[in-house]
Image 1 (spheres, rainbow, N blue to C red):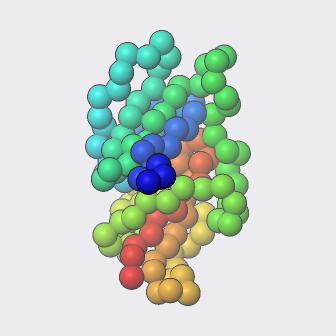
Image 2 (cartoon, rainbow, N blue to C red):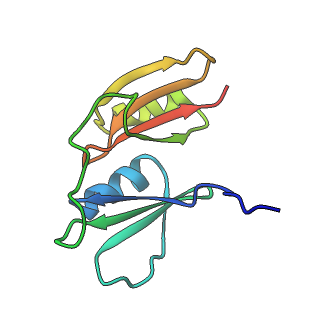
Length: 129
């Protein structure tokens, strides 16, 4: 039997502001902040289901924070499933999070929308059909 990938474990992003990042991923998107090992650099971990988002506060040993605010939904982005797309859209609007690609139905009928996190990473929020 050949080894195979089981699932996506985590995504790591470099950020410029830990408080703003925590507000976006925990307070707005509803992820859970989880314990992080005592690395020699600052960061935070957040959990969404079985997937983790690892953040690293930008420092000389990391890459730069952010993606430059691309709005190309067919380019680099990561996506989270949400149970109720329209409710999430309303929540984001209530928190003043600008929408990059407005809520719409994909050809398969699933809801999707795109926003930027505080460092300009393009984040898709989608609801299964």
